Image (cartoon, rainbow, N blue to C red; front, side, top):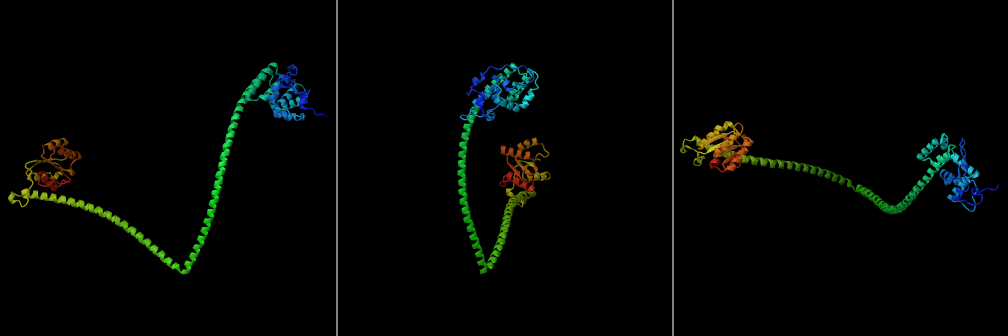
Length: 436
């Protein structure tokens, strides 16, 4: 049996009809009356065959289906020629249109079953709108075009939607093509970068391999040197054993141990010496402080002794003190004592009176009014302040007042009678002022 070509089936005259010719090759068949039977592919008006074939089947499926029919040996149809051939064949019932119908029915069985439930054009259009929103255009298109309730209005509305979708897809494809071109350029750049990085990586790897080889060779030399040194060490050890050097080695070890002990003892001794030196320095400082204090106390005692002897003599002729001619004479001046121990106040008074002076006392803010201190300081000719029995405020107020008014004053570190006696000599100009 002679095999018929798919192109012969589509165009019995042997000429491939162009798209426009196929679309207008024959008068559109009338849409059959509404009933319960679904339309066959060749029963659908011809103007809808192009969107059905182009939307519901891809070129790969068309080529596989067309392979069952013989292509012309002298040519292999293009995608466009395949599409036009199937559209032209769908115009009537033939082997190719029947095979195409069976493929569409098998491919969209599920969608067709869902659309079969539509009992009116309104329900059918509602299902079509829902399918558009869900992106199920190919199956929904086949189900609507073959549905018994799809009249001319429904088919026209669906055709309009498909027509606009094709424009949108075309615009999207143009954008995709532009993006694809840019992506290809980026891919080419990335390939160049990759090749550059790969070349650098190979160069680095080669460099590392050379370095590893060099280090491996060096390691082998070092291992050989170590082995020779171990052999030499063993040889020398054997020679030492043979020459009796172990005894000398033991003596050297004992000497080193003794030396380590002596060094440790020396370090301990040096540490103890440093401690004793520090203690000696502290003790020497303390001795100097005590000597200075003893000197001051001796001066205080001498001053007290002079005043006591002076006060006990009836006249200068009876005074046993050889320095009586230089005794303290306050010349009737008023001496104010600020602070001091309260039980010694009367002794302070007797000492001042014995030196031909007048005595006044302020307890340094312990009981006496602080405001009274200013008046007493102003009326006094000289001031003696004992720092150990006075408030801080009274001490500093006394010190500031006397310096400001250039009033003779002595600041005592101790409130003892001997210290007070020496202070009187300083006030009277008998003894040189001492540092307090």
